[in-house]
Image 1 (cartoon, rainbow, N blue to C red):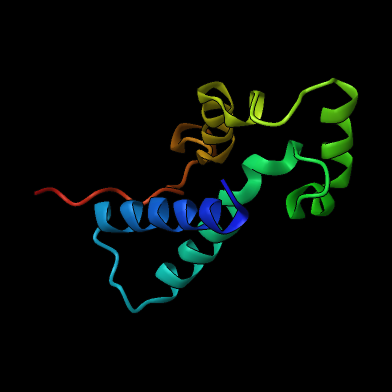
Image 2: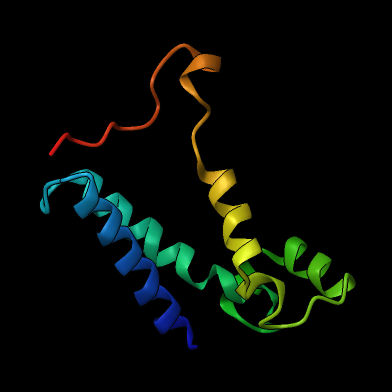
Length: 107
């Protein structure tokens, strides 16, 4: 996939989440989510030498190269997606004492 295809996939994923939580289309939350999706989509190409993400995250890209992780292996796997999802999940309320994740509406 090209960078623009990865970016489009990130935007579609962000749109799905926004739709799931009934976030209004014209809001700052939507704009932020779409920007994050557009930026996070091409992150799978961090292991491709010369890609934009490899240049932006040079230390991590170099580490992947040193570990001999080639393009379309680890970063294009379900395990990597699960790792990113776990890193993106907010800290639970039981630890922080406050809610950091919107609750889905009851339908």
